[in-house]
Amino acid sequence: MTAAASWFTRALAIIDVQVTGLHPDKDCIWEVAVLQVDDGLVTARHVWLINPVCGLPASVSRASGVLPAELVDQPRFNEIAAELAACLDGRVVVGHNLRIAHAFLRRAFALTGQRPRYRQLCTLQLARAAWPDLPSHGLDALCQGLAINRFFQHRALPDAEAVWQLLSALVAKVPADVLDQQVARQLRKAAVPRFLTAERLRAVPSRPGVYYFYGENQALLYIGKSRNLRQRVQSHFQNDHHSRRSLQMAQQVRDIRVQPTAGELGALLLESAEVKRLLPLYNRQLRRQRDLLTWALVPGPAGVQPALQAVGQAGVGGSTVGLFRSRRQALAWLRAEAGRSQLCLRLLGLEGGEGACFATQLNGCKGACCGREPRAAHDARLLAACEQLRIATWPWPGPVALVERDPEQGLCQWHVLDQWQHLATVDDYAQIEAARQQPIQTFSLDAYHILLSHLRRFPHTEVVIL
Image 1 (tube, one colour):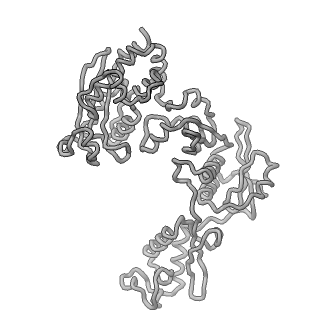
Image 2 (tube, rainbow, N blue to C red; image 1 turned 180 degrees about the vertical axis):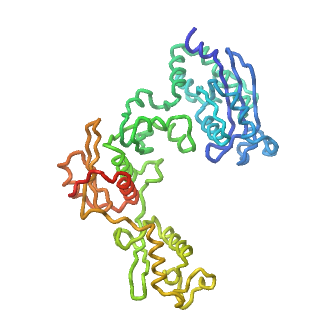
Image 3 (tube, rainbow, N blue to C red; image 1 turned 120 degrees about the vertical axis):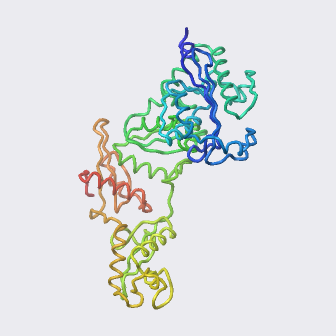
């Protein structure tokens, strides 16, 4: 008996999950069917209609023939979670395009505290490996090509029955060595994406650095960083996606490139710079930023006056407070602080007029605008409120190089910095002088936070004064 046939007689759970959309973090499961298979025979059939908390979209209702009213009196997922978990626990769960179903199940089970343990086998991946020349490997196309009849489409039980027939056809029609290899690979990890190989993933080094995901026609999809590149890259392809975007990206990756670094600091700085330079499709947090703004605390004859200025105009540190990505964000912060500290909007330049401001009538201002309290007391509260966002002063008289070493790989890097700005990273000390001649870049909020955090965590970092 072949390995595939031997596995085929084990405890299986053929599953189909119907969902309201493709966002595991926003959409919901509304129907689940499970066929329990033992020794190659279906021994039990289970199906649950579920009341989705997010409602049933009209498009799903039309495709499935199920009316939203039919689900109103059905149990919620948490009410059937224990029974469903018992049907899956300890079995090999088989589904078509199982990544999506597993993403929804994992999230839904996590909310209930149930954690069934099972291995996974995706018939979509098996079909692609067995019949690579087919124009489509969707369930509808495969059922049509293999003459598998379904009495309904887009319903959990008929689709689960179709997956079981598809799996039986694969075992009967596909050469044993081809199927054995694919089954063994999926049961080991179930984490190799469509367009990559396990060998390519194993070739990613287990060291710090930055990785690049490329899609069709070498389109750059994503840039990331990690202290262990291999583990982080493989984690993208595990069947536990929490969003539609992560599912889409994992299915599009065709090539991976890596840039090792001497440590975590180098990886963080390189990732931040590369995302802003190359603008990958799926990176959002580190994308190119607008010019940053800061509040400059300008002393005058009457008292301290906050003035919103561009970071390039005001510089950082000293009498500047905060780093904001927009004028709206900066004004919102100052107004909130005024409310918390009973500051006068008129004296802050956020409101016009003369004499007592309207907030004094509501005890929102202590009256510095009309002489009820000294201006110095008002300004003292303003400075205290600003202290929490004061930009750290650059701790050296000029440019420096932070040294980072990887003794195992024999790599040493110098991160050339000046006034919280990352000028360059070099692998040779002789290149530092050329790096210092690089044009000054726009102040990067991400680089500021990366460097400040690193220095606080590692106060004994090796520093070369330039």
